[in-house]
Length: 121
Image (cartoon, rainbow, N blue to C red; front, side, top):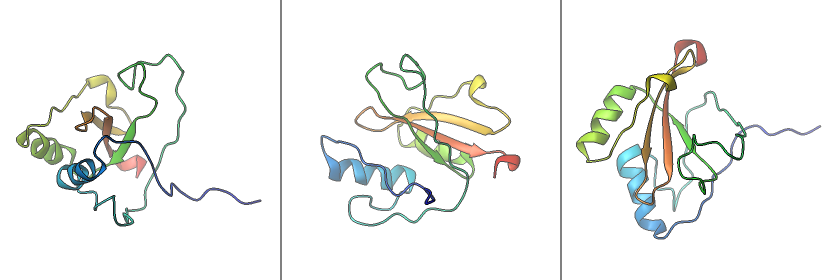
């Protein structure tokens, strides 16, 4: 039986795809997502359906939440704040699997940044 071996892409609508791709490259270090294949590091990935009425994603109409693994969450949060990007943290988000923060891209899409704990890597 065949099986999925990883995420091959994540596709979403945008009012200005080129500007949004540039924002992801500038602030998150994701290669130009509009023109190239982004080579990412191997590591843990979570695929988890949430209840229809969850408020974890933010707006009620928000159907997805992108989560990126990061190295040195503190440095990344400092860089984002220095660029004028609001960074949200909550003590209850941090757990045995690692530390988290939340930002939003220019179109209001939620992005979770995750620094995995040593046990989760």
